[in-house]
Amino acid sequence: MKLDIATPVFLLAPLAAAHGAVTSYIIDGKTYQGYDGFAPATTPKTIQFPWPDYNPVMTSTSPMMRCNGGKSAQLSATVAAGHNVTAVWQQWTHQQGPVMVWLYKCPGDFGPTCTGEGKGWFKIDQMGLYGTSLTSNDWGTGIVYNKKQWSTVIPSNLSPGNYLIRHELLALHQSNTPQFYPECAQIVVTGSGSDLPPAEYLYSIPTYAPQSDPGIMVDIYSSKATTYTCPAGPVWDGFKK
Ligand SMILES: *[C@@H]1O[C@H](CO)[C@@H](O)[C@H](O)[C@H]1NC(C)=O
Ligand SMILES: [Cu+2]
Image (tube, rainbow, N blue to C red; front, top):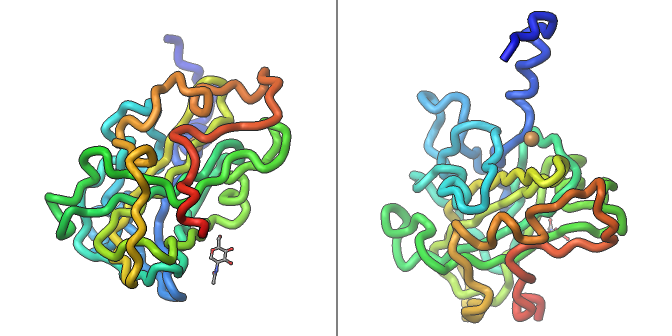
């Protein structure tokens, strides 16, 4: 390949620095700093699994899909069922594609036995297209673009215990080139609830859907569709009671 010497290096650098990741969480007014993927040597202990950089995961089958590479964190945050977890992105640059928020109930303690293995992931929140044009900014990720935040209610009757919470942005701005941005954190859900979704709402990550899923492999520019269906099905209705 011929080097284009007319392209100054400073114009290339921002491309690498674009995209985004969840960088902190807010629960009941308290901020929990996330992992700093750019200063791993000095990052303090966090509730968030480590992630390498702001770059996307490019295939739904990648091991990076689960938690952007991280496997554990040193801390956890407590949240009462019925309260909100707000994820914060220091930066986010895309406006087409869904937001999906997932939970995974640990069999016991956090750590090596709670890395999100097996068919235990379920959605508690999602927003795809809320308008009628795929090329518009009327998407969940468009809201994240504007607010740099996403708030999700922990279902009020959710069974208490140790959970991983996984925030996933699926960017669809490049035709048939989906970009996934998943990050995970450790939360302790309190309360006296007993709900967990039935088996048909549980997924392994990877792979909750093939790369060919119509909610993943999308050309928003040539598609005539006026609706969009998130991959991996709906949020369980039982949570909305
Ligand atoms: C909790 O999150 C929901 C969903 O985004 C939002 O409607 C609600 O205003 C939030 N509540 C608080 C107290 O922030
Ligand atoms: Cu990007």
